[in-house]
Image 1 (spheres, rainbow, N blue to C red):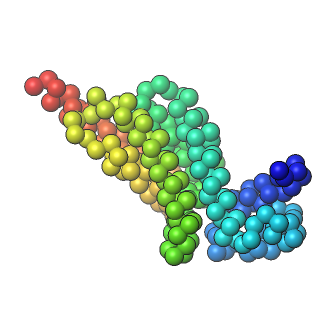
Image 2 (image 1 turned 60 degrees about the horizontal axis):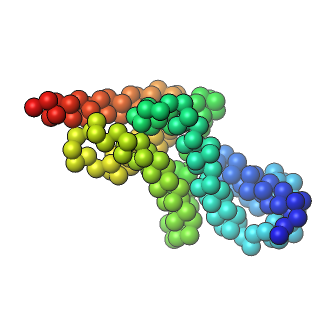
Length: 205
């Protein structure tokens, strides 16, 4: 079992990597920048990780661990309504866009595009992160299922919500404006409204 000091050093490396990979990209972050930001030497780094790729995997594993406590649970705590829980998750990303003056980019989306496609272990972890996000939205859709048209594919719909968020975040960063994100989310809400209205119409027949 690692001593507290060693554990703190490892955590500092992961936190620095999370920040730098988001700010500068994986390829754009050098080992020297990582060590300087984390305030550790190369010996300490290689005590915990055998390569920069190993550190990337640790970062991606941490994203999986933090998804529920940092993203999903706070959003779900704001409302008991399944549909509004979905939009509460999306509202959290909107806040991040505004807090960073529209420079926020989903770190996982950036890594998915940047990491070499042949780096299968990293992409497997990125996919697990996305799947965890999809499953959180899917939970809401399952609770909402009686209000949706019969036969609605909740897995596909949950994936559609993720794609809307990722695309909206990317456009807002490029346009340096939250408006593209707001338009995408507004259109998503309209889509849900049409689904619910269609289900009501069919039930009334």
